[in-house]
Length: 406
Image (cartoon, rainbow, N blue to C red; front, side):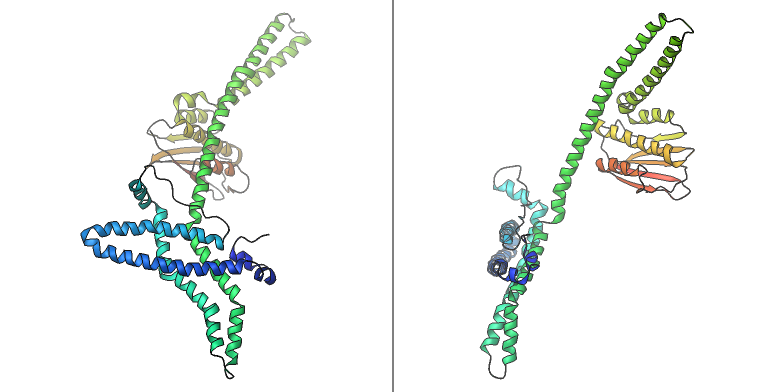
């Protein structure tokens, strides 16, 4: 596989590495670092001195602000130079300002976190990195030259040492170039920033998925209500008309009774399914009423203590209903509890839910007891969840979900 960084190139066989362009690319990177660093030190030193001198006249504030903005140009140049020893492109972390003109651009850049990271990198580069570049180059090439020049019959071991240093210079130069590149990437393309972009996309994708699932749930509920349920009603009417022509006590009458009973059961289960997909009480009266309605049909007593300052948004209300619904279903299936409690409060833009039971406890989140599905639901809502379930009980499910009321 083709190496993409100087360090990856050093992991190749010595012949492949030494005959590749990587040692020369690393040398160019360090030489460029020395030259560019010297220019930056001269320019920044002059600007800093001028800014401090003129600070009393307030003109220095403009000079110092210009110094901060100039660091973005230094960082931009470093990102381009980085391609010598790191082939993965470094994205520009700056966003386009909303306004137009230099003033809008400058005001936007001064408020960006990336600008101040680049300023910190510029100061580190000016005070340390380019000096280290010079030191590595001096050790790798300057020291052998001095030793060769000073060689005589009594100092031949130093000649051998200088030759060894020179032979090792491709590795010395490339190893420092790789380390410098890694440090540069850390400052100019921090991993948390890349993850931030990915995380925003994941969250946006989760939001779209939740919206599409909610819309699909409503569509299925409507299709079942207007389709399958109406067909069952029609079938019931047909069976009723057929019974009018069937003598009482006949074998056909018994079969009709069985069919009517099975039809009634199917109709009841379908209505329960429709009510679970899109509970009318949830759409009409909100989360608290829907949870109380569900608790009234629960096989064990459930105490509901929910207090909210208002009606939740639909995109949050439905997922929270199914979250609580699934948690209570897990209690009924796995806990062996005789009672349960749902407690919820809203505080500082966070909805806090505690769902507890008096069951046997010992809940293992990795044992496939439904906790994984709950964690996925909470994660999709950008919340967090903790489970406390000692052996012998009780079990407490603590959920915190970001929430804002309009």
